[in-house]
Image 1 (spheres, helix red, strand yellow):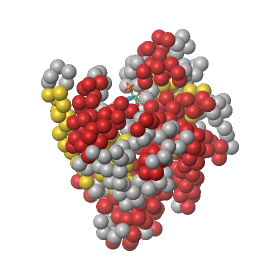
Image 2 (cartoon, protein in one colour; image 1 turned 180 degrees about the vertical axis):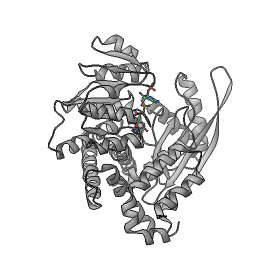
Image 3 (spheres, protein in one colour; image 1 turned 120 degrees about the horizontal axis):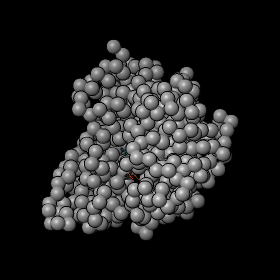
Length: 444
Ligand code: NDP
């Protein structure tokens, strides 16, 4: 049995109840086969694959808080510190009822390679809770965030582990958590990113993931002799990533015709009105029915369905496993040329394989949405030097990083004879740097 298959078997045995984690490990290790085969003896002897698939530590804790009725509620908190070979652990905090250890592990594992790809010194980690922020008052959110940070503060620090936002954790939640950390530790340090601009946040962090997705997509298209101008784009999601991806795509001259949330989706053939979408989702925190009510050109549909709309480019920006095999078939049948993932693992493995087999240029989230964490690392740099850079300066660095990522993954795929396989290219490029650091640091 090959070394990859042996380790996949081992990981399956040890983590049988964590399907998302197994899916991520399977996808990554399968695409690393050529690299592993070329270095099999060295990697085996040093148990590289066993070590890289086992987190440094996984922390689970109780989060008790009091709701507005005076009732004590209990949630479960997580922080998985996966690998710090190239820098302090870095990765977001997800607040969503679906959160469990397997999901946090899958995200933390992916984060190792994504962070490595940014070329910045950050390791991989992820955290969160099964707390549902929806429908909670500001006071309830604060009570939860303070309790969550009271425990988490024992395990993080500016040079140890620097969490950030993710689904359900925006500027409000980061603010409450930062305040509690400061209070407990009695010091002001850049322990979280995604902070408000008045207390150490970086300009352009809010826009970074969506903008970065488009910088990479534009470079990919350009290298295939095309431009964004006049392209029809289908986006899923209506959160942070989707909103700023839509904005940047439209600035580049493309037309984005869809968005979606967890209950329904919008088809707006005139092009999504970003200002209205922001008002509905960021200010009112309402459903997309409100977007449709305010915009005559928009059609609202219940359930899921954005992938049936004809497009040149598809950008899944909502959540994991939201683009399935049938959706991939529909996209190909409609002539879609390019799929770049704004969300983490939105495309299932069979859908990815179908898209690749049918000549669609497919870039996975690890590379395509790395702009968020890259800009978080730029926020860490600004905090360390106690300076703030202008929007233009951060945005220019972000663009440089994303263009560089595209060329690195393209080059890695070519080096191993898999030209155009950007999924393998991203895994290989991210993996090589981490493994070199692990080997240099001995058995740890
Ligand atoms: P948000 O919470 O801001 O938005 C998520 C969006 O997806 C919302 O519109 C939400 O709908 C929708 N959604 C959630 N679950 C489902 C579902 N099961 N079916 C359909 N729609 C759903 O999150 P972000 O935009 O920050 O993150 C989106 C994705 O991008 C995640 O996978 C995240 O891990 C990834 N990502 C985010 C980064 C960032 O900087 N924010 C960085 C890198 C990756 P509703 O409005 O109803 O809640």
